[in-house]
Length: 165
Image (cartoon, one colour):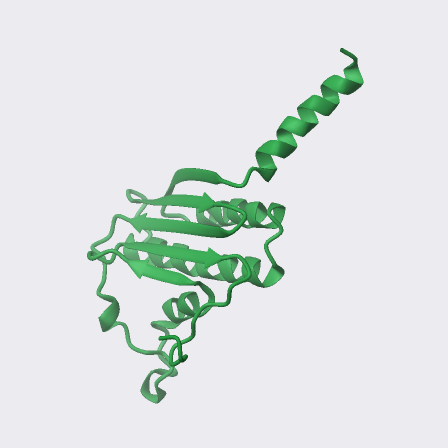
């Protein structure tokens, strides 16, 4: 076998790995936003390789950043002794991300609506609102210390008040 065909076979295996329709990974990071940015970059790169539309890549990047910051700052309160567990499933059709912190959790119903006049200048609730506006699915576990985000490639999320609700 020639050197050129060895290189071609290696390149094809590498490309097949990156172009594979399904990918799954788990990672545990310390409560450090720079660690969260590295995970975010990995997921964004995988979406770009799968040719997700720019709009979807932006949506996932924004929602993921908000969810990671919430877990690190609000859930684990930046504690160096606590971690965030991240699970990510990627395919050519959708991406699903679970982020769980070691905090006490929260009750989503107690987060003020940031669009109400009395809350416009309050800093709470905006990240959750943005995640919901950009993702097709956003769910929390009962304790409130795990969020599940899902984006379907090329599908706009349902907006509150839409006829489909």
